[in-house]
Image 1 (cartoon, rainbow, N blue to C red):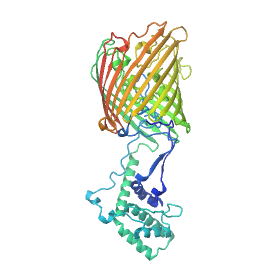
Image 2: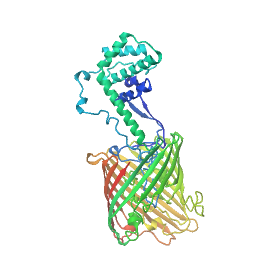
Image 3: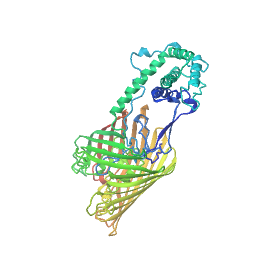
Image 4: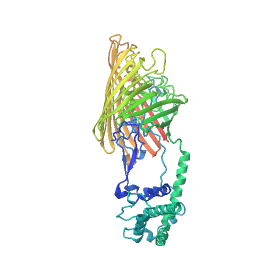
Length: 607
């Protein structure tokens, strides 16, 4: 399981080891020979080791083909009742993140896929690529061509790779590596003749002519590759959105239907076709920060299946429904920056929830590729207060311990009484300790202290009694504790669980309410040998009011269970199709209510 650092950005460098670099340094002479060097780099790429700085903070989301069940959530739910998160947090990774990071997110999330550098490098008739028998031989250090070029380098210093001007080779070069070095040396010698009028001996000119004839085919191939690289580079530069910003997005289309639920609702359940579209921009100004903006639109409004005319319960809310009524809205605005190599600060004036900073530690916290329901995607403890703006800090205490803290409010931009960032009618402070006891497990311990003028939790994931505190309707202090675990006990199997206890106590009377919730999950990654696919089963209890004192309404009479399963089929790195079903027993924790079935086919496009 990946353990992502909380840093938003750091340099990524490539380390060349001397024995592998020996034959790649030919092209380091001048800018004119740099492009030929790129070809050598591509040829020797398998022997080059990429090393990421320990402070790496922004991650590029891996392709779905390489995904495993994740420990950190990539994105937040876009549901209008609670604010969403990265296309992925990243976490910041990248990561953090998703809860996230730059992944998918950049996340979360949105770095355009680069075209393979090998694509289009050799054009024309495929038979033109046929190599003659003489060309199959490598150039040995004992060959005349090797020794001749080495002699030229030592006398004319036409390759400036190492301080002594030599390439220190003691192993064979393939013919393309040798040709790249020869080309670099020819360019350098031509420059010296043109600029300084330096004379070249006739014997050396003869050697150069022989080398050119011997490696004419390789030099021509290199020239063709250089021209193709130049064309491709020009094309990429002309098509890129911005040299300093990354544009990306996600579009989710879903065909959803249901049955049952009469009561608690009227049971109307037409088959609906809905969408959620998000477009985001991520930019960095210093290399150690990240500015993120996201615009969203959707048509799954009027609370969807939670509408009184349908099932009339928050237990039927979906993770990918956004109440935007086809309007384009600014859904997220966030700025993250690194205080140090181990601390990142997050400021989010739009689209904030506690999980914007506190990692939800759920592999299903992704509206496009995760759980189908709002309840199952992550613990409701992170949704307390239905906040809209906030800030927080993420500290990496050690390689296996992270400490996160966040504060947010509702109606943060309002100038009227009960609004603002301090002293608002609804606010919440969260602290979380993340532990990585082994390389395959991450555990989280969470504490939330919140204030609600009306005594409501407002998680929109459980029963009406649980979410309203038994309809307390009084100023109240909320204290909640929760735990989470993700454990990959087999290469393809991940067990997950979370639970929470939420205690609401009136500040003006003896009224109190206690709410509980939990969930267990099992994910099977890459089933049937298909990389990127995921088969998941989730079972849990939506928030339930289990104890109360002096409340207008008493506890929930029975227990509702939520069953959910889905199969995410990876069509490509950017397209997935997810059929799934939800089954909710005793909706609203009331055995007198009819069970609810919801089925959906969700298709997700990412770019």
